[in-house]
Amino acid sequence: MTVKHAIAVIAAVMFGGVSWAATTSEVDIHDPAFGKDGAHYYLYSTGPGVPFYSSKDRVHWTTRGRVFATEPSWARSVAAGFDGHVWAPDVSYAGGKYYLYYSVSSFGKNDSAIGVTVNKTLDPASPDYKWEDQGIIVRSVEGRDNWNAIDANVIDDANGTPWMTFGSFWSGIKLVKLNPDRIHIAEPQQWHTIAARPHAGADVKTPGDGAIEGPFLFRKGDYYYLFVSTGYCCRGKASTYRVAVGRAKTITGPYLDKAGMDMAKGGGTPLVSENTKWAGWGGQGVYSYDDKDFIVMHAYEAADNDFHRLKVLPISWDAAGWPSVDGRTLDTFHAPLTK
Image 1 (spheres, rainbow, N blue to C red):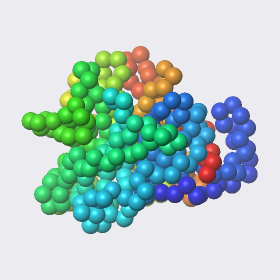
Image 2 (image 1 turned 90 degrees about the vertical axis):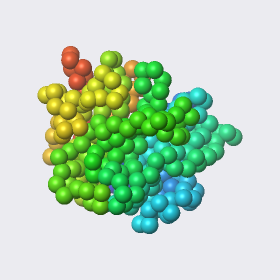
Image 3 (image 1 turned 180 degrees about the vertical axis):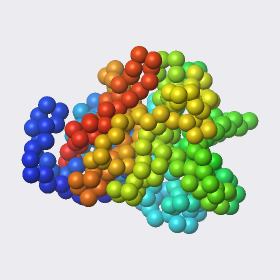
């Protein structure tokens, strides 16, 4: 994914209370993930070497390069069809270190692996800045496994124990307990299926049509909330990606939607209200900054050849503790980019 797509809009757009003439580049992104270090926010994306950006306000971004100068050394031994694009980064912080989880795969296959690289800082100007790759955490193999090792997200439970959720198509979204080092699966291994979609024709060799991926866990109040991307990405105006959510009082589930349906049996409440000007919103993360909660995702803009844009949108919570996002905010958020 590049950052070289310039947009030219005739009229000025009201943006953040300021009239913004959109004759500049805007962040072009897939599967965005946030991190914060000091006064700066850092944004990571699917793409060659994991492209990343920095910002002081979560709105205006500056391109900062890539995490991997080339590609993970082990990538091509895992996925024969690997094309240099590292997928679906996720950033977490623990014990004075930042952990960036990422995926290596090829489209439509589950010859995949999730790896992690570690740094003391996210600031590339710091003398301590150095990503040190720790290699593979978990790997799926085509023809052997009925699950897919991509789209990792790591969260600590209420006791401080790290868990990793991941998955795409096949038999759905998995959850597995990690060691305290956050780079190995805990033994004895504890695996759970926490979300799936009804599917036909799926076996260990084919993904089937149970379109679900991109899990992200967020703890708020008495609940763990599971956000997933359902439908199909990467098809421009034909993309059917949508964000769905359920919640549980224990991290291992069951995750129930607003109607009480288990997400492992196809449940999931839509998060974002519909907006026909946009297609394929998903690849999400959910974050809390300044006592406010946000969803970070990409969406395809119909008015601009279905180009994928960064969206950082506020989450509202109802009296019963269910989240929602006003689909009209897809129109009003823009992310100017300085190269």
